[in-house]
Image 1 (cartoon, rainbow, N blue to C red):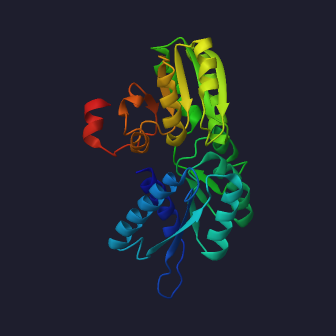
Image 2: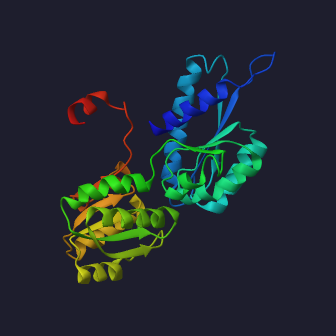
Image 3: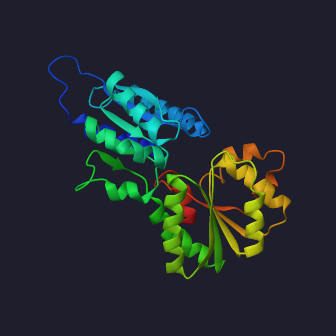
Length: 293
């Protein structure tokens, strides 16, 4: 749904551009995400969502008579590859706009090049607060976003955590997403009266969390905030259960997802009790909103 909103914003902006006196030219939209590498499942979702949305738009006549064409770039979830993906989409595919980059590091890495090439980019899910701070008037006027960031999420989630825990340790992946979120939650916890016991960073693809978990067992916070994606989260939670830790688990990433459940399908109870903060898209499920919001 976030993909649909992002694409709708792009379409509305581009629909007002003149198409010339000849047959209307298509609107070329590029999507950049991790199509390969450890975060490839996110790119798979982007590709499915974008293709479905564009097919639906074109089946209804396009945008003011203009068909939409979709192109994809692989940023592998990294800053350097994001630059290559942008250049491919702009120089080879000749896109009018880019939707991306899904991952915070990739988004931050792409921002200088979209400004240089003067192509607008609409970010759909990158959450490092620096993206908002660096965008718009006085910053990068080619960068737009439709999602909330981790500072906004942290202020709300910390209030919820404060109802159940007085101390917390953060375990975050060592990249722009993890470090941006850790900084945001550090400030939010202070506002909510929660003591931050420690902050631990880990590298993507890490297979052994036992030394880190042993330190957490020794410091014994009441709760943990895990800033991590499903690949690492499934390994971390297995070892967390093996060592017999019993802290309340809060998450920011993709631990409350079908991807995570797929990776622990041999023992789904590994994920029991995890409470995760994520985006909510207004009007996605009106009946649910009526019942719960």
